[in-house]
Length: 207
Image 1 (cartoon, rainbow, N blue to C red):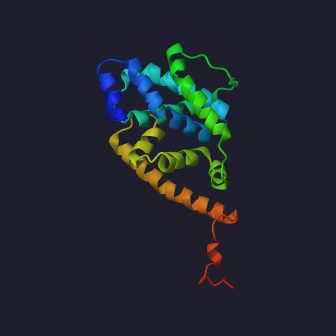
Image 2: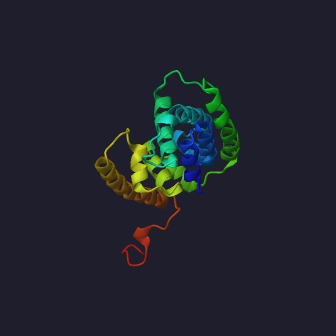
Image 3: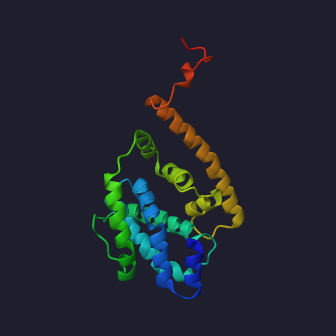
């Protein structure tokens, strides 16, 4: 069985703790990596990740399987990040969490954070980081995580959208993705990372 099937089997047998553990162990590192890029601060990202695990733990009994567990975790993470930014009293290290959820999150937090703090960002990554949050999220989910457009639309949704609305949002995000890619190309050319097309042979400005 693949990971999604293993999680569903645990849910079907009423093993919520086992399902939560399997989900966080399987998808936690990539979700935390997503949050680091989204929040831009590794320490704050681990706070948001802990909240995501709490939300998973609290809501797992109501999970209906309308999307994959992976997609749902990304949705929870994005919503947790939005709440974190709205909290004017947030402080590094401020986390009152459910003990079970904390136990799930901590191994992933520590292992992933050690890796992310030592990873050197290349110049393309810095260009991506200069984009606004929604565009960064779109790039991460599509390029880094390889999500389908319907899955990405679900992550961006507010919840309980109809299939028709999700399809329209998926189409809109796909068009936006093309614009964001072009913006990155322009910035990369300005940074000298790509050849200047205006000086390519046949452009009229070539020597």
